[in-house]
Image (cartoon, rainbow, N blue to C red):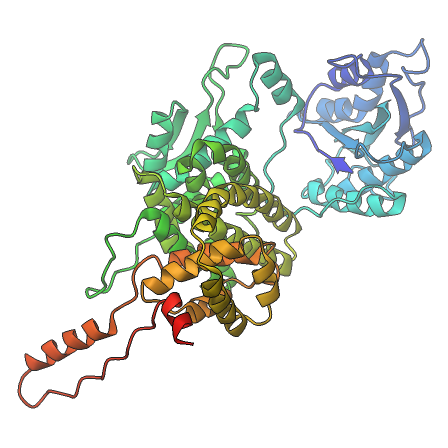
Length: 569
C-alpha cells in the first residue's frame, strides 16, 4: 500500500472538482464518500443530485473561515491531500474496509487523533477500485492547527501495519533516503512532450553521470552546463557557491519561464553539501618511493581499486563511502564500455543509485582510491580489451554482492533490494563480455595430459570446489589461462589459492569463469625471475660500502611449464 501526502493547497473546491470529475483520462468511476469526520452531516454529491461540491467545500472550510475572520493573518495552506493506493495484485477492498483504512490514516497523521472531538474536518473519496483520496482542511474546530510534523513517517508506518492486517502486498519500510516519486502532473507533462522520463528523473541521470568527471562542486556545475543542462547557482556576496538548481531544456511553466529543480529535491544525496563532501576530499599523499606500473591501464587500475572496498567494510562509515564510490565506478564503466553493453550497464547504474545512500554517514576520504579509479576511467581515451573489461565487470559483480550483504546486515531493505537489482544487470553484462573471451581461450586449450596436470592443481588448491570447477563448461578456458600464467613464471596452484581467497566460490554460478577473470588479472604481468633478482642483489651488494656486504640468497629454480612438469612425472 502506498500513501503520498501532497504539498499543502488552498483550494478545497478545486480539489473536490478533480475528485468528483472524470479524471484526466476518464479513469474516475462512481466517485463517492466512503468515510468522513463525525460531524459531516450532509449529503454526498456523488450520491445525491441535489448536493453540490460548493456546499461540501464550504462545510469542510468552515473552521478555516472562522479562524480567518478572527485573526488578521489568514490561513491559505489549509488543504491536506493524501491518495492511498493498493498494489495491482491486491484484492478489491470494500467501501467498509476503505473507510476503516481512511480512519487509521487520519489518526496516524494527526488530522483526527483518536477521541478528539475538535479535530480537523476530513472526507475520503473513492472513485476507483484500487485507491481513495483523503481530503482534510487543517484548521481544527477550536481554531488551532494540527501537529503534522513527521506525518509522512507515521503514515508510512500505518501502511505497513495495514498491509499485514488486510493481507495486502507487503512493502519495505521507508528510511527517508528515497527520492521523490514523480507527480501525476510531471508524468502527464512528459507524456505530452514525448519525453521518456520526467524532468527530475532526467536531471538525476545527468547529474550522476557527471559526478565521476568532477573533482569539485564547481567542476560539476561546469560539466553540467557543458552538457546542455540549465544551471542556476546561488552565490553569496563573496561569490562563494551556496546552492544550486538545474533545469531541463524545454521544461517551461505556463508563462514560458524555465523550471528549475534544487539538487535536494531531485535526490537526497544531490544537495550541495553532500556533493561537496563526496567530491572535495583531499587525496592521500603517496609515499615518495612508491612505484607505479605505467603499463597498467585504467581498466586494470579500476579492478585493483575494488580490492579497497573489500578491505574497508569493517567500519560502517568507510563501508558507506566505498558503496557510494562503487556507484560512481559502475556509472563510469557504463559510459566507457562498448555499445552492446550500454543498456545493461546504464540500467545497473540507475538501479544502484538507491543503494548508494543510507542513513549511515559516509567518511568519503576512505574511498578516495575507488573514486579516483572512476575518474581515471571516464577520462581515458582508449577502450578496454576483452579480458580487461570482463575482469572489471566480474569484479563489479562481486563488489555489488558485498554491498548487498552489508546493507542486509544493517537492515537497509530498500538499498539491499536495489543492489540485488543492480546485480542482475551486471551479471548479464559480465556474461556478454566474457563469452567471446572464453571462446577464444577454449580454442587454445592445452592437450589432455596438460589439463590432467592442471586438474591436479585445482584439486590441491581448492578441494571444496574442485568438482564444480572441473565440470564447468568453462574449465578448458581456465586451463588455458593457467597454462599461460605458468609460461609467464607463475605457479598455478598459488594463483588458484589466491583467486579463491579473493572471491569466495560458494555463491558463484560458474566458478571456472570467476577464476578465469581473477587469474587473468593477477597473472597479466610475468612473474619475477628469481635468477635475475638474485643477480640484481649481488650487483647491489658489490657496490655497497665495505663491511655492509651480506651473502645473497641462493636463487631457486623457476617452476617448469605445465607440459614439462607432465613429462617429468
